[in-house]
Image (cartoon, rainbow, N blue to C red; front, side, top):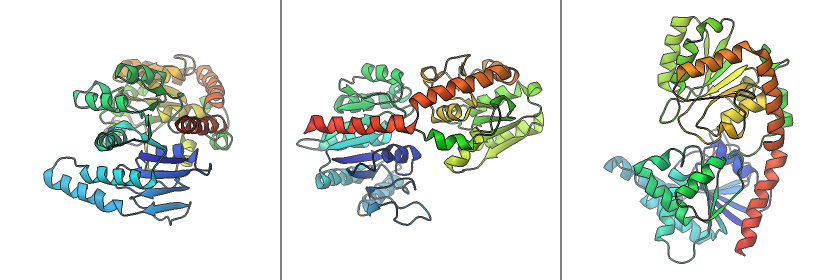
Length: 392
């Protein structure tokens, strides 16, 4: 079986998904949607364009075919000169790669870059196109499907692909509304499963209610609402004595807000630098509660990591959280832009030790049934094998 992934080369989600099938003896290829260094966790495949991760050699059985880099650079230079996006030569490179390797399956991981690029090649290609899987990441259709600039493109992608995968039941219905009539694959997390036995060693000893850290996701952009989270914490200042707030993936504007927050409240805030995945999980495992706010997402990987590590999740209602936690029991689901409602959720999670500890137990059971690597990985392998068998 030959599988060509069209994806972001430096994404941990790309690396983790592909790792689930990299030991099957299949021919796996990665075509990057932009010039970037390949994530160090990627192994056992051939990469067109891109470069090894910094400080890494060509280990992990990764082979690089570099000629496509020239075409990426041509698009980049044209885009700089014309001040408008250009993928003309990238499309030519992808089409050439497809003719060369003749993949059985093309899998676009994400829609706005990978899906649109694959669609452009398919529309211009004569003859039979490989079986095409499209995976919806994050806000790909929940948010972008409502924007005039993207709706028609998303409809075109969903109208042309053969299979659609996503990590929320919500997004199956949305895909249908946007014209998808192909085969929907089982709902699975886009990051794949977790090795829960190994991860459990990273948790702090004792009950989650004894932890004295509050973890905030620091995204403030088209979807992230970390500033609302900080505003909510301001409203809880009387309950925060003895706690440290930790913020990861902090945007520049969030860093400014954090400095002012500390000056005004005298509550310590720690900005988490870029750390390894293991170290980040250890931070979750030292946190009493996790706050993740955005106006759109699929199942937030951060939410799943909080559940795995026993941190009580407070998650916005736009991220399919209701498909993983029960509101008020194993977490609290909040509107993403109402600091008063979020503040009330924070106060409750700080005041009710029994709630926090009981939620950790429930979430441990949930992830053991739905997120364990040994549960997820065989399903992923079976999906590709099933699709391949249907095409031959």
